[in-house]
Length: 225
Ligand code: AMP
Image 1 (cartoon, rainbow, N blue to C red):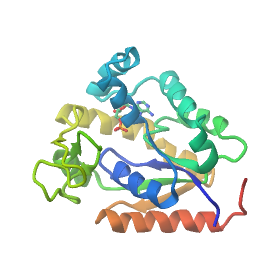
Image 2 (image 1 turned 90 degrees about the vertical axis):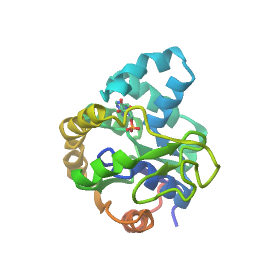
Image 3 (image 1 turned 180 degrees about the vertical axis):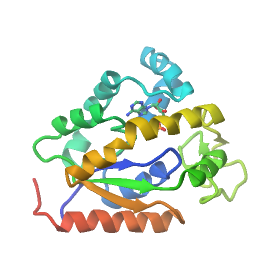
């Protein structure tokens, strides 16, 4: 078995990328790099950088590519990702970002890009019910309800709604997904990197589909050091 893996997860807001990335990062023992989580943590700590990106995030707009590229470049340069690989969640979101990523990852490149497909009606329902633990970040919703009311099953932290899960911001983010991010599916398909995964159903079933797609791809290939 080839150790480590280099993956990107694509999918609309509410498709379950965050939930699946947690499962996949445990399965393959690689870091889960969520650009949204990195930006939210910067805004919570009130750094200059956090203040700079806060407005974009609240309105559901994309943070400019040059800013995002620096964030990801720095993260991919750390020891853990260089050694074992990574799962990228929320990056790339534009063809410009994908082009930069391709250059950053030369010569090995990505192993696979998963496109988690969920119909828009289903993501709207999921986003309306989405709650996130304020301590450990575990995500709850209609497909994965908490057993402890308003508290996290894992750590007892309080659950809250994301600041950008408002009707207006959700609409804008889905619009931007369709215009700026969806074109990436054909971009990666042309490069023979894309696997489409049905994102409907219980999270463990979706994870099994994703693992099957990744392992099929990994067994196709000789180990790359
Ligand atoms: P997410 O948690 O992935 O839904 O991201 C939350 C917000 O962070 C997005 O609505 C954007 O404002 C910003 N963001 C995260 N990743 C990116 C990216 N790759 N490019 C531009 N903006 C991003």
